[in-house]
Length: 486
Figure 1 (cartoon, rainbow, N blue to C red):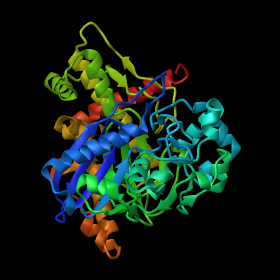
Figure 2: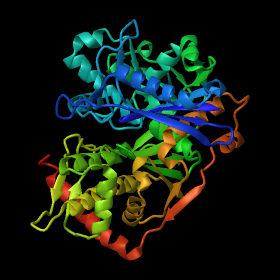
Figure 3: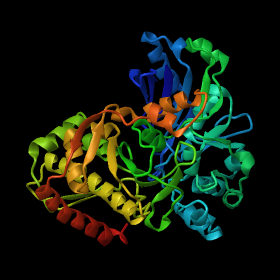
């Protein structure tokens, strides 16, 4: 069996995968995000580790972990985890959806063009590099004592193995990598007053980085098994649903919303705020559009409107079923990346009247998230991406109603497959399995990372899609009308 550990924003999820590619057990442990100021988003790295330990201990109750052959990791990308020379965290980690470093982004792009030319990406507040520039300016003592900068999942790897390591897909999201060469860029590090010594060693996602520390092996009833590098959550999610070849794509409905398409080589189009990263497998790359607030908009609205759960909120929206052409929600609770690159954008309800109900607003939130994802899809097409098949993953994808709504708004068939709700953890476990194979090849990747069994295909309804195309045009008009106000 193989253990996959996924460090998400809201929880750590762990799964056990057998040699038949079946998930035989899973567990999770919740996490809390702290927002001490507007636009800030932080977590305690030690809380990640406690949650991981709790989830593994829960798995241990009904499963023989001595059968585990390797461990793989996935996790939320871009988080700045700053460690001193004793490898202890110096401050709370600054997360992917933190927007405090907008000024530093402008400064870094002025210092060197390599972020665009070698990194293939605009400098955005969500990425790791501007976070370090912010720390240097506002917390100079912390910056001066920073010995290593790790990404969230790599902090778990440090706890598991004692090694400071990372993989290509996650590290590509720091903005310190030459993406085509799959190596750190000295010029981009220098722009942040950093060097290679501050960085972890780089591995491909399916390479072994070390072994589980013996004291943990004894505690968990395991052997000191190999731990592979793993991947950022999006690349791991893609591996989990077999999105490993050019033309394959996935749409992830998690806290954030991500469109991910595998490319036939390194490509970039930073002008459209499209991300260009390494994939989790050797010699593969991908393009990605990212909206910062997707399913978390539903969490927010459920809380403020007094609904007991997001599931109940979606059910209300579905039962209402009223199409309102002028009731529109802009989903920018944490700013936005693709295609606007605007950290100052914020959420907006437009078109409320005396007859508007909670169910109407809930449907508007679902539509607004979906239209934001359509923005990202259109940016990928403009960047030259060829998209043959789209697989839905993430917790939000569990809703058939939302899946059909997306198909109508995107005007494209969408596939929902078995295991889609645990994509990143499944991808981590698959990478662990690849890591302990005697050799790696294209056929081996296809065997170990198959496309899961189809559960349902959602095809757009032409009449409904036409209605939503008109509403989507209004959605874009409202954003651009407010852009200068933000």
